[in-house]
Length: 125
Image (cartoon, rainbow, N blue to C red; front, side, top):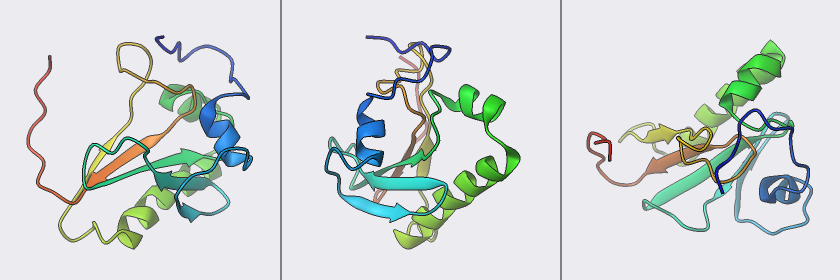
């Protein structure tokens, strides 16, 4: 079902449940702004999701509503995760899907970190 990035935040989405400790995950990192864990359907040797701790549906929602300190803290957290995973040397890809056209599957902002192999240019369908 396509995600409407303008819809109100759903407190029962899977990532909200992970944040509350109601669902298990393979945690990689946590700080005041973000929580990171391994994707359950990895698309690369390293595939980690980083989610903000606040209730944001999408990138657009986050950048429009979050205070500057939260945006900066979240961005720094993504960088910290890439360094902890030792991806900063060989490189990595970041991906944020937004809404139905962006193929967003969970209505909670999340950044995908892909690494552990060579990536090539992206070709649209």
